[in-house]
Amino acid sequence: MDVGESLENGPIEEQQNAGARRLRHLFAEAARHHQAGRLDEAKRLYLEVLAIDVGHAPSLHGLGLIAQDSGNFDVAVSMMRRAIAADSQDTAYRFSLGAVLQARGGYDDALAVFRDVLHLDREHLLARFRVGNVLQLQNRLDEAIAEYQHILEMKPDAHDAQFNIANVLRLQGKLTEARVHYERARAMDPGNVDTLWNLGLLDLLEGNYAAGWPNYEMRHRRPTHGLRAFPEPQWKGEPLQGKRILLHAEQGLGDTLQFLRYVSRVIAAGGQTILDVPSTIQRLATAIPGVAEVVATGETIPPFDVQCPLMSLPLAFQTSLDSIPGAVPYLSIPEDAKRAAIRRPWPAQGLRVGLVWGATPRFFEDSDRSIPLAFFEPVLATQGAHFFSLQMGPSADQLDKLQAPLTDLREAIGDFADTAALVAHLDLVITVDTSVAHVAGGLGKPTWVLLPFSPDWRWLIDREDSPWYPTARLFRQPRPRDWESVMKRVRSELALISQKENH
Image 1 (cartoon, rainbow, N blue to C red):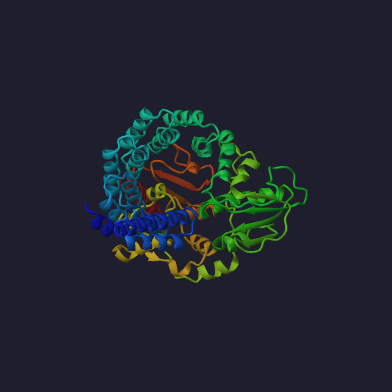
Image 2 (image 1 turned 60 degrees about the vertical axis):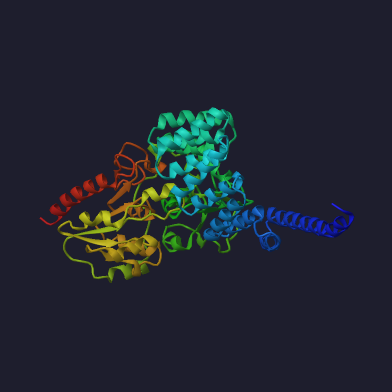
Protein backbone atom coordinates (compact mmCIF):
# COMPACT_ATOMS: atom_id res chain seq x y z
CA MET A 1 0.00 0.00 0.00
CA ASP A 2 1.53 3.40 -0.98
CA VAL A 3 1.42 6.55 1.14
CA GLY A 4 -1.41 8.08 -0.88
CA GLU A 5 -3.61 5.04 -0.39
CA SER A 6 -2.88 5.03 3.35
CA LEU A 7 -3.85 8.69 3.69
CA GLU A 8 -6.99 8.13 1.65
CA ASN A 9 -8.19 5.21 3.82
CA GLY A 10 -7.29 6.74 7.17
CA PRO A 11 -10.35 9.01 7.57
CA ILE A 12 -12.68 6.19 6.47
CA GLU A 13 -11.26 3.86 9.08
CA GLU A 14 -11.61 6.57 11.71
CA GLN A 15 -15.24 7.08 10.71
CA GLN A 16 -15.85 3.38 10.99
CA ASN A 17 -14.25 3.28 14.42
CA ALA A 18 -16.29 6.27 15.53
CA GLY A 19 -19.46 4.60 14.27
CA ALA A 20 -18.61 1.43 16.12
CA ARG A 21 -17.94 3.37 19.32
CA ARG A 22 -21.26 5.22 18.99
CA LEU A 23 -23.09 1.92 18.43
CA ARG A 24 -21.47 0.39 21.50
CA HIS A 25 -22.30 3.48 23.56
CA LEU A 26 -25.94 3.52 22.43
CA PHE A 27 -26.36 -0.17 23.15
CA ALA A 28 -24.74 0.14 26.58
CA GLU A 29 -27.12 3.01 27.41
CA ALA A 30 -30.10 1.05 26.11
CA ALA A 31 -29.13 -1.97 28.21
CA ARG A 32 -28.68 0.24 31.29
CA HIS A 33 -32.14 1.77 30.89
CA HIS A 34 -33.61 -1.67 30.20
CA GLN A 35 -32.12 -3.11 33.38
CA ALA A 36 -33.45 -0.14 35.36
CA GLY A 37 -36.97 -0.68 34.00
CA ARG A 38 -37.05 2.47 31.86
CA LEU A 39 -38.44 0.57 28.90
CA ASP A 40 -39.52 3.48 26.69
CA GLU A 41 -36.03 4.98 26.79
CA ALA A 42 -34.44 1.56 26.26
CA LYS A 43 -36.66 0.93 23.25
CA ARG A 44 -35.77 4.30 21.72
CA LEU A 45 -32.04 3.59 22.06
CA TYR A 46 -32.34 0.04 20.72
CA LEU A 47 -34.03 1.49 17.65
CA GLU A 48 -31.20 4.01 17.25
CA VAL A 49 -28.72 1.12 17.29
CA LEU A 50 -30.73 -0.69 14.62
CA ALA A 51 -30.72 2.46 12.49
CA ILE A 52 -26.93 2.09 12.43
CA ASP A 53 -26.83 -1.72 12.17
CA VAL A 54 -30.14 -3.33 11.16
CA GLY A 55 -28.83 -6.77 12.14
CA HIS A 56 -27.58 -5.91 15.63
CA ALA A 57 -28.71 -9.09 17.39
CA PRO A 58 -28.49 -7.87 21.03
CA SER A 59 -30.75 -4.89 20.24
CA LEU A 60 -33.24 -7.07 18.41
CA HIS A 61 -33.22 -9.34 21.45
CA GLY A 62 -33.74 -6.38 23.77
CA LEU A 63 -36.75 -5.18 21.77
CA GLY A 64 -38.14 -8.70 21.91
CA LEU A 65 -37.84 -8.78 25.70
CA ILE A 66 -39.58 -5.41 25.99
CA ALA A 67 -42.40 -6.59 23.73
CA GLN A 68 -42.77 -9.73 25.85
CA ASP A 69 -42.97 -7.68 29.05
CA SER A 70 -45.73 -5.64 27.40
CA GLY A 71 -47.67 -8.78 26.46
CA ASN A 72 -47.08 -8.21 22.73
CA PHE A 73 -46.03 -11.77 22.01
CA ASP A 74 -46.22 -11.56 18.22
CA VAL A 75 -43.71 -8.69 18.11
CA ALA A 76 -41.56 -10.47 20.69
CA VAL A 77 -41.43 -13.63 18.55
CA SER A 78 -40.56 -11.60 15.45
CA MET A 79 -37.70 -9.78 17.21
CA MET A 80 -36.31 -12.99 18.72
CA ARG A 81 -36.34 -14.72 15.33
CA ARG A 82 -34.53 -11.77 13.74
CA ALA A 83 -31.91 -11.92 16.52
CA ILE A 84 -31.41 -15.66 15.88
CA ALA A 85 -31.08 -15.03 12.13
CA ALA A 86 -28.38 -12.46 12.87
CA ASP A 87 -26.52 -14.72 15.32
CA SER A 88 -27.61 -18.34 15.19
CA GLN A 89 -25.07 -19.55 17.75
CA ASP A 90 -26.10 -17.42 20.72
CA THR A 91 -28.30 -19.68 22.86
CA ALA A 92 -29.74 -16.71 24.80
CA TYR A 93 -31.80 -15.62 21.80
CA ARG A 94 -33.22 -19.10 21.25
CA PHE A 95 -33.95 -19.50 24.95
CA SER A 96 -35.86 -16.20 24.98
CA LEU A 97 -37.84 -17.26 21.91
CA GLY A 98 -38.80 -20.50 23.62
CA ALA A 99 -39.91 -18.58 26.70
CA VAL A 100 -42.15 -16.31 24.61
CA LEU A 101 -43.67 -19.24 22.75
CA GLN A 102 -44.35 -21.00 26.05
CA ALA A 103 -45.92 -17.87 27.54
CA ARG A 104 -48.40 -17.58 24.68
CA GLY A 105 -49.30 -21.28 24.83
CA GLY A 106 -47.35 -22.57 21.83
CA TYR A 107 -46.03 -25.56 23.73
CA ASP A 108 -44.96 -27.71 20.78
CA ASP A 109 -43.02 -24.84 19.20
CA ALA A 110 -41.49 -23.87 22.55
CA LEU A 111 -40.39 -27.45 23.16
CA ALA A 112 -38.68 -27.57 19.76
CA VAL A 113 -36.83 -24.31 20.43
CA PHE A 114 -35.64 -25.35 23.89
CA ARG A 115 -34.38 -28.60 22.39
CA ASP A 116 -32.53 -26.55 19.77
CA VAL A 117 -30.80 -24.78 22.65
CA LEU A 118 -29.80 -28.13 24.13
CA HIS A 119 -28.48 -29.22 20.73
CA LEU A 120 -26.12 -26.23 20.86
CA ASP A 121 -25.35 -26.62 24.57
CA ARG A 122 -26.26 -29.90 26.23
CA GLU A 123 -25.41 -28.48 29.67
CA HIS A 124 -27.82 -25.53 29.41
CA LEU A 125 -29.69 -26.37 32.62
CA LEU A 126 -32.31 -23.62 32.26
CA ALA A 127 -33.28 -24.91 28.81
CA ARG A 128 -33.58 -28.45 30.15
CA PHE A 129 -35.64 -27.14 33.04
CA ARG A 130 -37.95 -25.40 30.56
CA VAL A 131 -38.28 -28.63 28.58
CA GLY A 132 -39.51 -30.24 31.77
CA ASN A 133 -41.90 -27.36 32.39
CA VAL A 134 -43.43 -27.60 28.93
CA LEU A 135 -43.78 -31.38 29.13
CA GLN A 136 -45.53 -30.87 32.45
CA LEU A 137 -47.91 -28.36 30.84
CA GLN A 138 -48.65 -30.93 28.13
CA ASN A 139 -49.43 -33.53 30.81
CA ARG A 140 -46.45 -35.63 29.68
CA LEU A 141 -45.59 -36.12 33.30
CA ASP A 142 -43.21 -39.10 33.16
CA GLU A 143 -41.17 -37.34 30.47
CA ALA A 144 -41.09 -34.18 32.60
CA ILE A 145 -39.73 -36.16 35.57
CA ALA A 146 -37.03 -37.65 33.33
CA GLU A 147 -35.85 -34.15 32.36
CA TYR A 148 -35.71 -33.00 35.97
CA GLN A 149 -33.81 -36.14 36.92
CA HIS A 150 -31.34 -35.42 34.11
CA ILE A 151 -30.74 -32.01 35.68
CA LEU A 152 -30.06 -33.66 39.05
CA GLU A 153 -27.53 -35.97 37.40
CA MET A 154 -25.66 -32.92 36.12
CA LYS A 155 -26.22 -30.81 39.24
CA PRO A 156 -27.16 -32.93 42.29
CA ASP A 157 -27.98 -29.86 44.39
CA ALA A 158 -30.51 -28.44 41.87
CA HIS A 159 -33.30 -27.60 44.29
CA ASP A 160 -35.80 -26.53 41.62
CA ALA A 161 -35.48 -29.85 39.77
CA GLN A 162 -36.04 -31.80 42.98
CA PHE A 163 -38.97 -29.56 43.86
CA ASN A 164 -40.58 -29.99 40.43
CA ILE A 165 -40.27 -33.76 40.58
CA ALA A 166 -42.28 -33.59 43.80
CA ASN A 167 -44.89 -31.38 42.14
CA VAL A 168 -45.30 -33.76 39.21
CA LEU A 169 -45.58 -36.79 41.48
CA ARG A 170 -48.30 -34.97 43.40
CA LEU A 171 -50.17 -34.35 40.13
CA GLN A 172 -49.89 -38.08 39.43
CA GLY A 173 -51.42 -38.87 42.81
CA LYS A 174 -48.16 -40.44 44.06
CA LEU A 175 -48.29 -38.57 47.34
CA THR A 176 -45.85 -40.71 49.33
CA GLU A 177 -43.18 -40.35 46.64
CA ALA A 178 -43.96 -36.65 46.32
CA ARG A 179 -43.31 -36.15 50.02
CA VAL A 180 -39.92 -37.86 49.72
CA HIS A 181 -38.86 -35.40 47.03
CA TYR A 182 -40.27 -32.38 48.87
CA GLU A 183 -38.22 -33.43 51.89
CA ARG A 184 -35.11 -33.77 49.71
CA ALA A 185 -35.78 -30.30 48.32
CA ARG A 186 -36.16 -28.97 51.87
CA ALA A 187 -32.84 -30.55 52.86
CA MET A 188 -31.18 -28.72 49.95
CA ASP A 189 -32.69 -25.37 50.95
CA PRO A 190 -34.27 -25.56 54.43
CA GLY A 191 -35.82 -22.10 54.34
CA ASN A 192 -37.25 -22.24 50.84
CA VAL A 193 -40.75 -20.78 51.04
CA ASP A 194 -42.19 -22.65 48.06
CA THR A 195 -41.03 -26.00 49.40
CA LEU A 196 -42.56 -25.37 52.83
CA TRP A 197 -45.75 -24.03 51.23
CA ASN A 198 -46.14 -27.14 49.09
CA LEU A 199 -45.41 -29.45 51.99
CA GLY A 200 -48.24 -27.64 53.77
CA LEU A 201 -50.56 -28.18 50.82
CA LEU A 202 -49.67 -31.87 50.77
CA ASP A 203 -50.39 -32.17 54.49
CA LEU A 204 -53.75 -30.43 54.06
CA LEU A 205 -54.63 -32.66 51.10
CA GLU A 206 -53.93 -35.72 53.25
CA GLY A 207 -55.93 -34.30 56.16
CA ASN A 208 -52.93 -33.70 58.40
CA TYR A 209 -54.14 -30.27 59.43
CA ALA A 210 -51.90 -29.92 62.51
CA ALA A 211 -48.83 -29.90 60.24
CA GLY A 212 -50.54 -28.27 57.27
CA TRP A 213 -51.87 -25.00 58.68
CA PRO A 214 -48.50 -23.68 59.97
CA ASN A 215 -46.80 -24.25 56.61
CA TYR A 216 -49.84 -22.80 54.86
CA GLU A 217 -48.78 -19.49 56.46
CA MET A 218 -45.74 -19.55 54.15
CA ARG A 219 -47.99 -17.95 51.54
CA HIS A 220 -47.43 -14.66 53.39
CA ARG A 221 -43.82 -14.77 52.23
CA ARG A 222 -44.48 -15.72 48.61
CA PRO A 223 -44.03 -12.69 46.31
CA THR A 224 -46.67 -13.97 43.88
CA HIS A 225 -49.34 -14.41 46.53
CA GLY A 226 -50.29 -10.77 46.89
CA LEU A 227 -51.27 -10.91 50.56
CA ARG A 228 -51.83 -7.42 51.92
CA ALA A 229 -49.67 -6.22 54.81
CA PHE A 230 -51.07 -4.26 57.74
CA PRO A 231 -49.18 -2.66 60.66
CA GLU A 232 -51.74 -4.05 63.09
CA PRO A 233 -50.81 -7.46 64.58
CA GLN A 234 -52.23 -10.67 63.15
CA TRP A 235 -54.73 -12.34 65.44
CA LYS A 236 -53.60 -15.78 66.63
CA GLY A 237 -56.76 -16.92 68.39
CA GLU A 238 -56.38 -15.18 71.76
CA PRO A 239 -59.51 -13.71 73.50
CA LEU A 240 -60.57 -10.54 71.70
CA GLN A 241 -62.35 -8.86 74.63
CA GLY A 242 -64.22 -6.41 72.44
CA LYS A 243 -61.32 -5.52 70.13
CA ARG A 244 -62.11 -4.50 66.58
CA ILE A 245 -60.78 -7.18 64.24
CA LEU A 246 -60.40 -6.93 60.48
CA LEU A 247 -60.94 -10.17 58.55
CA HIS A 248 -59.67 -9.65 55.03
CA ALA A 249 -60.05 -11.70 51.87
CA GLU A 250 -57.21 -13.18 49.90
CA GLN A 251 -56.66 -15.58 46.98
CA GLY A 252 -59.78 -16.55 45.02
CA LEU A 253 -63.46 -15.82 45.42
CA GLY A 254 -64.16 -19.43 46.37
CA ASP A 255 -61.56 -19.24 49.13
CA THR A 256 -63.29 -16.20 50.59
CA LEU A 257 -66.71 -17.83 50.41
CA GLN A 258 -65.46 -21.02 52.05
CA PHE A 259 -63.81 -19.29 55.00
CA LEU A 260 -66.63 -16.89 55.77
CA ARG A 261 -67.86 -19.81 57.91
CA TYR A 262 -65.40 -18.69 60.58
CA VAL A 263 -66.91 -15.20 60.99
CA SER A 264 -69.47 -16.34 63.57
CA ARG A 265 -66.70 -17.98 65.59
CA VAL A 266 -64.66 -14.76 65.60
CA ILE A 267 -67.72 -12.86 66.81
CA ALA A 268 -68.22 -15.49 69.51
CA ALA A 269 -64.61 -14.95 70.57
CA GLY A 270 -65.56 -11.40 71.52
CA GLY A 271 -64.52 -9.48 68.44
CA GLN A 272 -66.21 -6.53 66.77
CA THR A 273 -65.79 -7.84 63.26
CA ILE A 274 -65.04 -5.83 60.13
CA LEU A 275 -65.02 -7.74 56.84
CA ASP A 276 -62.98 -6.71 53.81
CA VAL A 277 -64.12 -8.78 50.81
CA PRO A 278 -64.30 -8.38 47.01
CA SER A 279 -67.19 -6.23 45.83
CA THR A 280 -68.92 -9.23 44.25
CA ILE A 281 -69.15 -10.84 47.72
CA GLN A 282 -69.91 -7.69 49.74
CA ARG A 283 -73.70 -7.87 49.61
CA LEU A 284 -73.73 -11.57 50.54
CA ALA A 285 -71.29 -10.99 53.40
CA THR A 286 -73.38 -8.11 54.71
CA ALA A 287 -76.18 -10.61 55.44
CA ILE A 288 -73.99 -12.52 57.94
CA PRO A 289 -75.46 -11.86 61.42
CA GLY A 290 -73.38 -9.88 63.89
CA VAL A 291 -70.85 -8.32 61.53
CA ALA A 292 -70.06 -4.72 62.50
CA GLU A 293 -69.17 -3.54 58.99
CA VAL A 294 -68.45 -4.92 55.53
CA VAL A 295 -66.26 -3.00 53.06
CA ALA A 296 -65.37 -3.88 49.50
CA THR A 297 -61.68 -4.47 48.89
CA GLY A 298 -60.13 -1.16 47.87
CA GLU A 299 -62.50 0.97 49.94
CA THR A 300 -61.41 2.83 53.07
CA ILE A 301 -61.18 0.47 56.03
CA PRO A 302 -62.38 1.79 59.41
CA PRO A 303 -59.96 1.65 62.37
CA PHE A 304 -59.24 -1.77 63.89
CA ASP A 305 -57.00 -3.27 66.56
CA VAL A 306 -55.98 -6.63 65.11
CA GLN A 307 -56.35 -8.31 61.74
CA CYS A 308 -56.39 -11.79 60.26
CA PRO A 309 -56.50 -13.07 56.68
CA LEU A 310 -59.60 -15.21 56.28
CA MET A 311 -57.48 -18.21 55.34
CA SER A 312 -55.43 -17.97 58.51
CA LEU A 313 -58.50 -18.48 60.67
CA PRO A 314 -58.22 -22.31 60.62
CA LEU A 315 -54.77 -21.93 62.21
CA ALA A 316 -56.07 -19.41 64.76
CA PHE A 317 -58.78 -21.89 65.78
CA GLN A 318 -56.43 -24.92 65.52
CA THR A 319 -58.86 -26.58 63.12
CA SER A 320 -58.64 -30.35 62.75
CA LEU A 321 -60.72 -32.64 60.55
CA ASP A 322 -62.97 -33.23 63.54
CA SER A 323 -63.39 -29.56 64.43
CA ILE A 324 -64.15 -28.04 61.01
CA PRO A 325 -67.07 -25.61 61.42
CA GLY A 326 -69.15 -27.57 58.93
CA ALA A 327 -72.65 -26.57 59.97
CA VAL A 328 -74.70 -25.19 57.07
CA PRO A 329 -76.12 -22.90 56.04
CA TYR A 330 -73.56 -20.33 57.16
CA LEU A 331 -74.41 -17.98 54.27
CA SER A 332 -77.59 -15.88 54.30
CA ILE A 333 -79.32 -14.37 51.27
CA PRO A 334 -80.16 -10.64 51.31
CA GLU A 335 -83.87 -9.86 51.02
CA ASP A 336 -83.53 -7.79 47.84
CA ALA A 337 -81.77 -10.69 46.10
CA LYS A 338 -84.51 -13.07 47.25
CA ARG A 339 -87.23 -10.80 45.79
CA ALA A 340 -85.48 -10.64 42.42
CA ALA A 341 -85.00 -14.41 42.20
CA ILE A 342 -88.55 -15.34 43.17
CA ARG A 343 -89.93 -13.35 40.24
CA ARG A 344 -88.32 -15.69 37.72
CA PRO A 345 -90.57 -18.19 35.87
CA TRP A 346 -89.37 -21.32 37.65
CA PRO A 347 -90.87 -24.62 36.42
CA ALA A 348 -93.46 -26.05 38.79
CA GLN A 349 -92.63 -29.69 38.03
CA GLY A 350 -89.43 -31.65 37.61
CA LEU A 351 -85.93 -31.45 39.04
CA ARG A 352 -84.22 -28.04 38.87
CA VAL A 353 -80.47 -28.42 38.33
CA GLY A 354 -77.88 -25.63 38.26
CA LEU A 355 -74.76 -26.11 36.17
CA VAL A 356 -71.24 -24.63 36.16
CA TRP A 357 -68.54 -26.10 33.91
CA GLY A 358 -65.74 -23.55 33.74
CA ALA A 359 -63.28 -22.41 36.42
CA THR A 360 -61.41 -19.14 36.09
CA PRO A 361 -57.82 -20.07 35.17
CA ARG A 362 -55.06 -18.46 37.23
CA PHE A 363 -52.34 -21.10 37.04
CA PHE A 364 -51.78 -23.88 34.57
CA GLU A 365 -53.27 -26.49 36.93
CA ASP A 366 -56.55 -24.53 36.98
CA SER A 367 -57.37 -25.43 33.39
CA ASP A 368 -57.70 -29.06 34.50
CA ARG A 369 -60.66 -28.07 36.70
CA SER A 370 -62.81 -27.00 33.74
CA ILE A 371 -64.92 -29.26 31.54
CA PRO A 372 -66.03 -28.34 28.00
CA LEU A 373 -69.79 -27.74 28.04
CA ALA A 374 -70.23 -30.23 25.19
CA PHE A 375 -69.33 -33.02 27.64
CA PHE A 376 -72.57 -32.26 29.51
CA GLU A 377 -74.91 -32.82 26.54
CA PRO A 378 -75.77 -36.42 27.57
CA VAL A 379 -76.51 -35.16 31.09
CA LEU A 380 -78.71 -32.39 29.73
CA ALA A 381 -80.84 -35.07 28.07
CA THR A 382 -81.97 -36.41 31.47
CA GLN A 383 -85.74 -36.84 31.45
CA GLY A 384 -87.71 -34.82 33.98
CA ALA A 385 -84.88 -32.38 34.76
CA HIS A 386 -84.64 -28.66 33.96
CA PHE A 387 -81.15 -27.20 33.70
CA PHE A 388 -80.04 -23.67 34.54
CA SER A 389 -76.62 -22.21 33.76
CA LEU A 390 -74.98 -20.34 36.64
CA GLN A 391 -71.80 -19.99 34.57
CA MET A 392 -70.16 -16.59 34.35
CA GLY A 393 -67.00 -15.40 32.61
CA PRO A 394 -65.48 -16.52 29.28
CA SER A 395 -66.65 -20.14 29.64
CA ALA A 396 -70.27 -18.96 29.38
CA ASP A 397 -69.64 -18.21 25.68
CA GLN A 398 -69.83 -21.96 25.05
CA LEU A 399 -73.60 -21.62 25.47
CA ASP A 400 -73.74 -20.14 21.97
CA LYS A 401 -72.81 -23.50 20.42
CA LEU A 402 -74.94 -25.70 22.66
CA GLN A 403 -77.85 -27.59 21.11
CA ALA A 404 -79.30 -29.02 24.33
CA PRO A 405 -81.81 -27.10 26.50
CA LEU A 406 -80.05 -25.03 29.18
CA THR A 407 -81.49 -21.80 30.58
CA ASP A 408 -78.88 -19.05 30.76
CA LEU A 409 -79.13 -17.06 34.03
CA ARG A 410 -76.30 -14.60 33.34
CA GLU A 411 -78.59 -11.61 33.01
CA ALA A 412 -79.93 -12.27 36.52
CA ILE A 413 -76.49 -12.40 38.17
CA GLY A 414 -74.79 -9.21 39.26
CA ASP A 415 -72.93 -10.59 42.26
CA PHE A 416 -72.83 -13.62 44.55
CA ALA A 417 -75.93 -12.52 46.43
CA ASP A 418 -77.83 -12.98 43.17
CA THR A 419 -76.16 -16.34 42.59
CA ALA A 420 -77.11 -17.48 46.09
CA ALA A 421 -80.72 -16.37 45.63
CA LEU A 422 -80.98 -18.33 42.37
CA VAL A 423 -79.35 -21.40 43.92
CA ALA A 424 -82.02 -21.33 46.64
CA HIS A 425 -84.64 -22.11 43.94
CA LEU A 426 -82.74 -25.15 42.65
CA ASP A 427 -82.86 -28.74 43.85
CA LEU A 428 -79.26 -29.55 42.96
CA VAL A 429 -76.13 -27.77 41.77
CA ILE A 430 -73.58 -29.61 39.61
CA THR A 431 -70.33 -27.70 39.37
CA VAL A 432 -66.62 -27.95 38.80
CA ASP A 433 -64.29 -26.78 41.56
CA THR A 434 -65.08 -23.08 41.49
CA SER A 435 -66.80 -20.39 43.58
CA VAL A 436 -70.37 -21.62 42.95
CA ALA A 437 -69.47 -24.87 44.73
CA HIS A 438 -68.84 -22.82 47.87
CA VAL A 439 -72.00 -20.75 47.46
CA ALA A 440 -74.17 -23.84 47.08
CA GLY A 441 -72.34 -25.75 49.80
CA GLY A 442 -72.46 -22.76 52.14
CA LEU A 443 -76.23 -22.58 51.68
CA GLY A 444 -76.64 -26.27 52.46
CA LYS A 445 -77.87 -27.03 48.95
CA PRO A 446 -77.22 -30.53 47.52
CA THR A 447 -74.07 -29.98 45.48
CA TRP A 448 -72.13 -32.30 43.21
CA VAL A 449 -68.53 -31.16 42.78
CA LEU A 450 -66.67 -32.58 39.77
CA LEU A 451 -62.99 -32.89 40.59
CA PRO A 452 -59.80 -33.50 38.57
CA PHE A 453 -57.57 -36.45 39.39
CA SER A 454 -55.23 -34.22 41.39
CA PRO A 455 -57.67 -32.02 43.32
CA ASP A 456 -57.18 -28.90 45.39
CA TRP A 457 -56.22 -29.61 49.02
CA ARG A 458 -59.64 -28.71 50.45
CA TRP A 459 -61.30 -31.76 48.88
CA LEU A 460 -58.92 -34.24 50.54
CA ILE A 461 -58.39 -37.67 48.94
CA ASP A 462 -60.20 -40.99 48.62
CA ARG A 463 -63.62 -39.81 49.77
CA GLU A 464 -66.90 -38.82 48.14
CA ASP A 465 -68.03 -36.52 50.94
CA SER A 466 -66.58 -33.30 52.34
CA PRO A 467 -66.28 -32.36 56.02
CA TRP A 468 -66.43 -28.73 54.89
CA TYR A 469 -69.80 -29.16 53.14
CA PRO A 470 -72.11 -31.87 54.51
CA THR A 471 -74.50 -31.57 51.52
CA ALA A 472 -71.72 -31.97 48.95
CA ARG A 473 -70.94 -35.09 46.98
CA LEU A 474 -67.59 -35.41 45.18
CA PHE A 475 -67.20 -36.97 41.73
CA ARG A 476 -63.50 -37.58 41.12
CA GLN A 477 -61.63 -38.40 37.93
CA PRO A 478 -60.39 -42.01 38.16
CA ARG A 479 -57.34 -41.04 36.09
CA PRO A 480 -55.87 -37.73 34.86
CA ARG A 481 -58.12 -35.79 32.43
CA ASP A 482 -60.76 -38.53 32.32
CA TRP A 483 -63.94 -36.47 32.38
CA GLU A 484 -65.82 -39.06 30.34
CA SER A 485 -65.98 -41.46 33.30
CA VAL A 486 -67.10 -38.65 35.58
CA MET A 487 -69.88 -37.61 33.23
CA LYS A 488 -71.14 -41.19 32.91
CA ARG A 489 -71.49 -41.39 36.69
CA VAL A 490 -73.19 -38.01 36.87
CA ARG A 491 -75.65 -38.94 34.15
CA SER A 492 -76.48 -42.26 35.80
CA GLU A 493 -76.92 -40.80 39.29
CA LEU A 494 -78.95 -37.86 38.04
CA ALA A 495 -81.29 -40.15 36.11
CA LEU A 496 -82.02 -42.09 39.32
CA ILE A 497 -82.78 -38.91 41.26
CA SER A 498 -84.96 -37.53 38.49
CA GLN A 499 -86.97 -40.74 38.32
CA LYS A 500 -87.62 -40.62 42.08
CA GLU A 501 -88.55 -36.94 41.88
CA ASN A 502 -91.08 -37.52 39.13
CA HIS A 503 -92.75 -40.65 40.50
